Length: 227
Image (tube, rainbow, N blue to C red; front, side, top):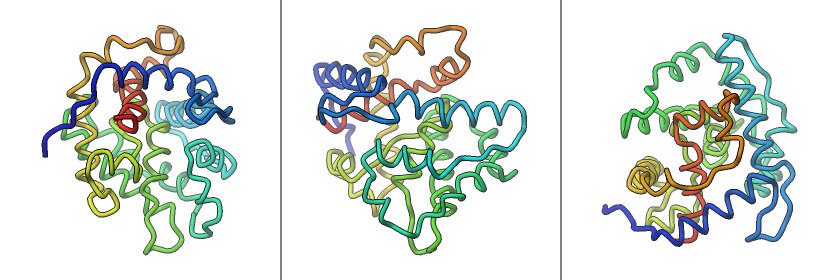
């Protein structure tokens, strides 16, 4: 399938929305976000990165996960009783998960995207009480913030439709399509303005996120929806 073309104006507009959402206001929805994108980045990313550095365990609260669900437009999940909120903590603290994370080569092209997809599928199993249910969309958002230096992408029904892929049946195809799209537009994405956090050389969390082009992926979330 050919990679969709997203024009420069759409990417520039997506950047402006991403900057605003980072600071806690979504101009498209005309509403304030609590927590903000920035707060979610540090709530999940800082906790995970510090734990990986120290080889320690970490606990992710149900409150923080519900905040992410609310801000990411997954409010319907609040009414679902199948979510295992302790699943993220269990999954992240598993030695096998740590080994899988450490084995991923940053900027490893499609091979990296395949490895991150496998982690996505693995985490979704930990988040469900009913094993017939898979919270793939929720897992993608968690991992996007949890491990910002690795190629994780936000997926949704709307993004799948924009790329002409029914993601519930073809999640891996959608995942690799998004990866190819971000790679295709990387030259322009490199030129985009970023939040101050990402230009602060003393901020180890955002500097690590820069190695995996986190801001590229954040902007493309909105660009895909607007294409």
